[in-house]
Length: 191
Image (cartoon, rainbow, N blue to C red):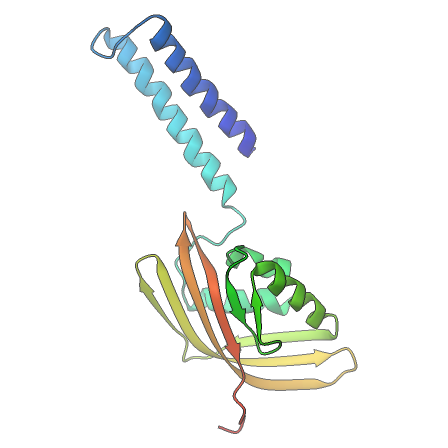
């Protein structure tokens, strides 16, 4: 659909430009020429914005909030990194700190590493703590939260653990995407 929208835009712009160039109309002349020109221009802008909306459909476009924090963790709990993909920037330069291993550089490394870890799991659930906070400043937002994680491996062993989570979002176009993330576990779980 995206390619078709751009074809309409190019067709409309090229057609209107060729008419005004070939016939040497100017916008100071005939009132119908002005109406036609601005109608085609409006149509091109509308189709372009519609194409941009279709292009970002797979990405999250709302302002980061506590509900979003839980949605992101629910996506990871499916044990399928593709479900979390829409919340993350795909840059190969982004750094993501996880409990294990120490860090991933770029979404591809993060996704592949998660897939390897998930092979040994049968269940995972995260609950965002009531201490979750989000700060928004311009095109960036950062959140902090404690998480309660429950994991069951394929052998049936259950691990219940508290975690610390800090995501950083950047607004890119219409979408807020995580560009950095820090997930860690305290050494002493009793506190």
